[in-house]
Amino acid sequence: EGIARSKSIRYIKINNLSNDGFTSIVRALGSLSQLEELTIGEINNVGPDGWSHLLSLLGSGVCKLKMFHLYRNNYMGNEGVDVLSNGLRGIGSSLKELVLEDNSIDSGGLSTLVEALQTCTSLETLVISYNDFSSAATVTGMGVLSNGLRAIGSSLNKLVLNAIRIGNEGLSTLVEALANCTGLKILSLSHNDFSSATAGLGSLSDWLLRDEVNLNELDLEYCGINDGGLHALVGGATNQCRELNLQRNESITTLGLSYLSNSIRSNSCRVEFLGLKGIPIGDDAMEVLAQGLVGNQSLRSLYLDDGITVTSAGWVAFSTALCDTSSVNSTYLSNHTIHHICIEDDEETIPRDISLYLQLNGEHPQYAARCKILMKHPHLDMEPLLHWGLKFLPLAVAWFERAKPCTTLTIYDEDSDLRRLVLDESDEAFESRELTAMYEFIRGMPMKVMKSRSGLAVAAAYDKKISRIEEENKIALERRDRKIEQLEEEIMRLRGL
Image (cartoon, rainbow, N blue to C red; front, side, top):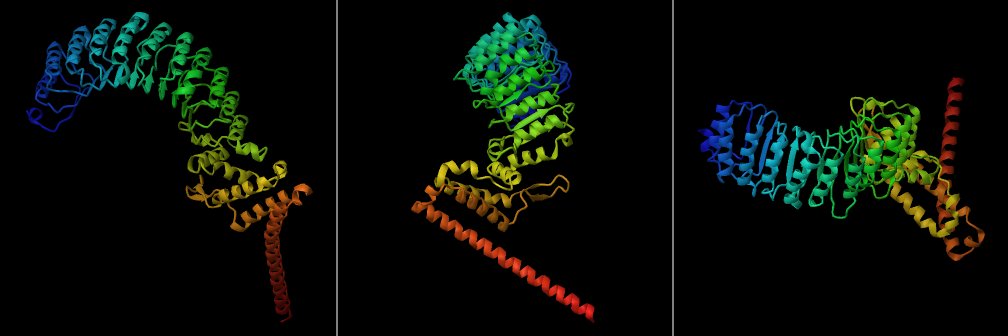
């Protein structure tokens, strides 16, 4: 009675009830015109009477549900699916989210259900997972489901079809229907067997490359994808998706990861979160992934398995991708985007230098490249820049001005859990570094450049600055020497006493 009288209940979850209890609550819900979300949870022992009352509730038009969730061991049977389908027709115009998970819906129930889905033209989220469709999820079954998807069309934002035995041909059929789902942002097909679905994964990749597609998340965990399947998939997946989950596809080897690496390295790559947990990764695989990071400007988080067998050789390749110290230009062209490598339960596996680079990329992305250059190149070789002439000098000066905040930036120290300076360098030392670089640049200029009026003016200006620094250093040394002499005289005097 309390439920029936309520004017404020908008969400209710029915969990672990007998048929009588279920029926009583559903009957009480008939007066709740404000009810928006109904969840029928775990192991409700619902009989024909209970399903009948649910049909009355949904078909009455009193409750304009926006979300309807039915999951985990609610043994519906064909009779229950019939009732549900009729009820969906009653709320189809208002329904935004439908979740049917682990309900023992068989192939016959799927056909009935899909007919009702065609009335849900405002549906944004559809989850039909962990139901034993058996052969229904091949061409015929997916063809039936595809008809429903075509009717829903562009309103669908999220589609989850996990563990319903989609195979190669079923996947190809599904992709054809996705052409109508131009608003789709999230697609999850995990726990389906795609070990022989190279063609289907290729058709999925082709769909992802279409201009009208705007998919952000693709979940293919536990799909048995092998190297050939990954090769067929990655072109479209990396060019379209921001989140790509390939976890637990244990048949993928270093060869498959090389295909992925090449796609990640492409300028068109959009992947920000990449899940590779459960994929065997050793030194060769880590080196291949590191090659993909060079030039990549999108990937922010990489998820690996705690069982990876990577030695120092593999980590060195990764460190080089994040900060190549072979030259200033190589350091600048290193990866300054990725900031998180997740190795579950074993974060200490990541070497300290890589952790430092990741922190810089994450906490100070606008300064990461400059900080790495200043950290790894105490002496900046200006000779490669001489061919630009004096027109490059203002750019060099501006670079140092933009890099100066690096001397004040801080990050967390792993040992003390306190923040420390990224670059422990005083203002005087930084200014000395800048003037030394400018001095070498000017002195390396050809004489015909230096004889120009502008060249002489620039040289004179920096000669003046350099002379000032040298004079200040000279005075400081003289003061130090006088102090030493005074201390020595005082020591001799004390000894004389």
